Image (cartoon, rainbow, N blue to C red; front, side):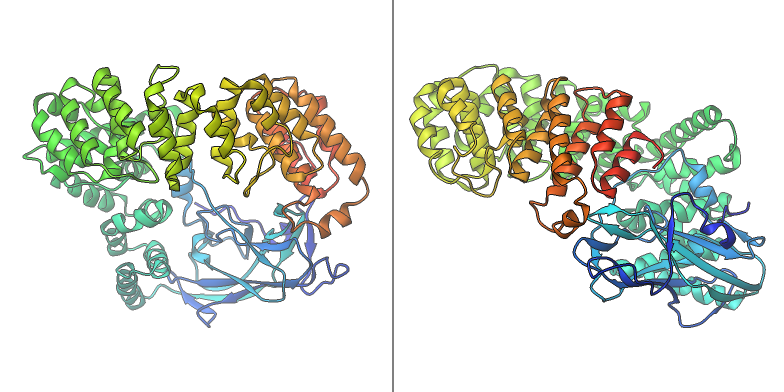
Length: 634
């Protein structure tokens, strides 16, 4: 089971890559100079036993003008690392996470990163070499790495940094060291510090002993709450599959609540022996599904033996609810209702939203009402929204009464989308309460403004016009424009013209906020006019709105706008780079208009149009981005 490593001799032969040697000066001050990328053995030694963790610091440093940065994307293997590691000799090196990366059917997630400016200060990223290579034979090994962490104007460059080699010595496995590292790993996992937990899980992951495998299983809840990768990779990379399966299934037999993904991970560990990677995909997929079903039934049967509200609540929340759970729900409504009300507000909201098919019988209505009555306004994932939506579906009369009261008062913080679900075109009796709700201000103002646009009568026209003469946030501005387009079209159309809005922190006409809930030919026409604006922010906002809501023919207007921009900035890439840090940087129009064109589902681009768009790029970043999106070679 050898790791697929790139030998140093091959490392710099990647097509299109341009290696930058350490301390190479490449141009004037706005260009990178004195760039360095080094590997530093963080433990202060170069000798390690087999199974011992090898922490390495990636140290980047350099100077350049605005726009140049080192990406701070996580260096760990679970992310989308910018580094590739090389080892010589490679014959006795294995990929320690081969089972993890090949034993599942895919990996997903989102990663946020920023940048470290090239201001002469170092940027340091900690990584554990053992996540890329496991040394199986004692000896001397030479390690180096290449990195594409250097970015410009938030876009990747074709510059590859290569670190000078370091040498490490690997000695035979040391049982006494394994024992002390096991104790250290467990201790770190009990820490409240994320860095300690990351190090502790890495230590146990690399030990590859039965005790380390069991320790990872026992720490699964803590690990998965911080990183799905740390939880899954640990148990799946261990060679002690059966010991892990026995430990995980013992927990199923206790019927206690399980963390997210527990049964799915257990099935993947079992699959490593029953249908290992390389087996027919359809066969593996079917077997994985069967194993998940087996263990779900096993856990459910245990949990339903005199279930506690917590255990039953966990069953309700699982996405793999079994026939046993459904049968229990049908015959134990009181117990299920108690379990639902014992959940936290966020869990109840999730159950009402994504688990509704499991509990949607008529018996649930009193529980929904109890959950709604006890809910409190929340900025995210409101329980009141989820409960009220389901009440309306099951009992239209009760739902309508509650919605009308909530429109009047806003007491439960229910969002616009639920409150807008009544079929009425207008609700005259609510003009006064809605006017008062908006005038009270606060976070509720946007919801109140959109409810005025949705249900308000023409009697509110003077109020709306008066408010639009005052500075407003973008969302209420958009709502009031939508109101005028319904009740006073000439006034609404005037508000769509550039310069007609008294602004407060948004672009001239709040097209994005308006298009989210109101779209017609007049808004589309305003967006096409805004696309021609000399203001970068206005033009970019219009391009993005047209990408999401425009007609198929609108792509022609976007291409034409990009061409005019390209003609203006042709041969001025260096000038663009100097303006890159500004929110009004002209390069934003180039980048975001191309993204709007290429990512839109409102139209289809021909191969010729895609090539035209790439040809209109002035900057390398734009060309690289377009090439990546259309799947073409640079």
